[in-house]
Length: 359
Ligand SMILES: *[C@@H]1O[C@H](CO)[C@@H](O)[C@H](O)[C@H]1NC(C)=O
Image (tube, rainbow, N blue to C red; front, side, top):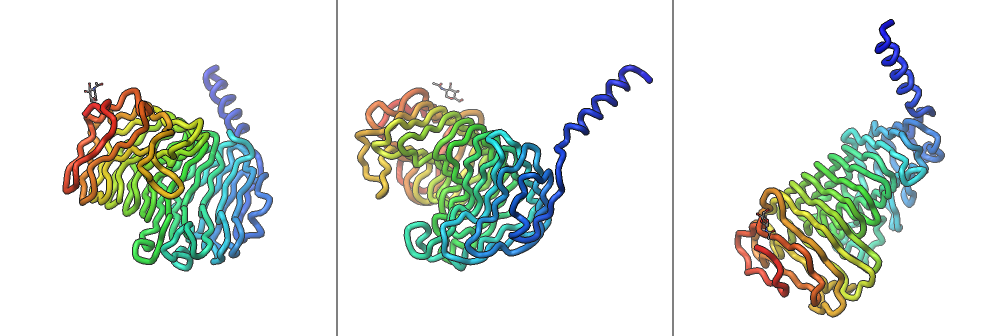
């Protein structure tokens, strides 16, 4: 045998051996979802998750593959949630979740009362909690009672081609239906996904090395960094290639006045395109409090290097105000190159209380 062939065969043998050993498991009922930690592959078939229960795939080993082969419906009950949770055995254990276009139905219309998380019915949220590194792709998450997906994975995670469809909520009382709420991540990419909702498309509250690429945000409150609270840091974020349609706000950064030990740094916007924006095109405000924006920025956090780069980002307004920047004294520093931000359409002119933005 040719030596290189021996080498190749040895390599193939090693590769096969390296594939995760373990069971193939089928989850076709809530009971079958218990103790899946030692499964190498998990196939999820169609069933209804009992009301008031979290369907939890917990402590999944590195290399575990979860394949959806059917749709899930979550039974209706007023409770805290979450409805579905995936978590790894360790921060770095990589899990692959293939939704294969199957639907998780949260039965939102039974909960929606126009109040979201601010009263009325108790709504289980988030609907989906992702605490595993790896990949989550091609899931359809529909009719979420309130917040849709919350990401808290500490290892690298890619969310790809996920659809969150709360479009019914626009006329049936959907509220606080955030698509992606992100906290304490390092190395998260959300790409090629669709968000139809009535609140933030992305709310990035804490984390570094985050990419939000080629997503569609329809009907909600735009792509947001924050609201940044005490102890929270957001660093190195790329927001690129997104389409934002008929949202109240296109792009924003917001922080709590008085938030101690908090910061936002190195935010890169490239080639984003918004139309039909009704309140604010580009917004950076540091006056957030639990009772909303107050205009007070006496104890603002540092926000450093907020730049539009690469290809132009465009925002077409349909009312409201083109931009608003409200920073504390000397807190918005570094490079603020907005020469590639193009705002047009019908709106009031922008306002800013800082003078270091380069247009
Ligand atoms: C701002 O960005 C534009 C486009 O990338 C670039 O041409 C320009 O030199 C930058 N200005 C400064 C002051 O960095």
